Length: 237
Image 1: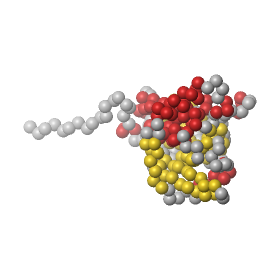
Image 2: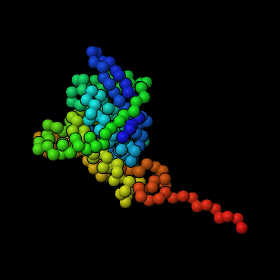
Image 3: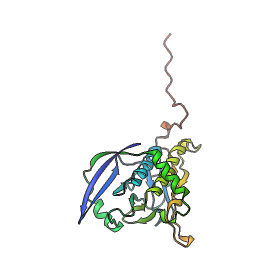
Image 4: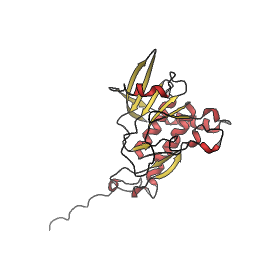
């Protein structure tokens, strides 16, 4: 898979941070804070969910890169309640990044360098399968934190690959759902199984994944159904 992006290199003290953003932004994908609202909902159209799957895959094999997905200013959805947040994907050992330092870095992201990201779906699927097969995955889950209206997901290669597979599933199955042509959001998958959880079960962090067709709906055609065409006028006698 190929994804267009912008690359930024920002120096903070003795460290230089490499930050990658998708380009153009995912205007039809939204995310609300799972920590402030107790339930996070990531909902997007096919393009947004498919590109997010690619970004998770890219993050999995890019240990020294921060992937920043601006979502706060996306087009609002009818049903994505709560506080809208951006998304940052990073490995746990990425340059000592602390969420509290993020606003200063984000404020310096101006003119990025055009970049094409390449991902390998087979390699991603292999590492996702390895994560699923591991007998004990608690230490390998994503750690979630929210700061400055940004959800940080910090993890390692295999769990990012497993999460990428879940997003890819939602992107592929969403347009096929019977509710999709009417513009309803369709809950299809979840990132919750990949997130670290507290020892007590009453304060779980949950992030579900939904699909919603991009308006205008009269242009939405589910896969496998021929696109409607305007009939030709009858020939003059």
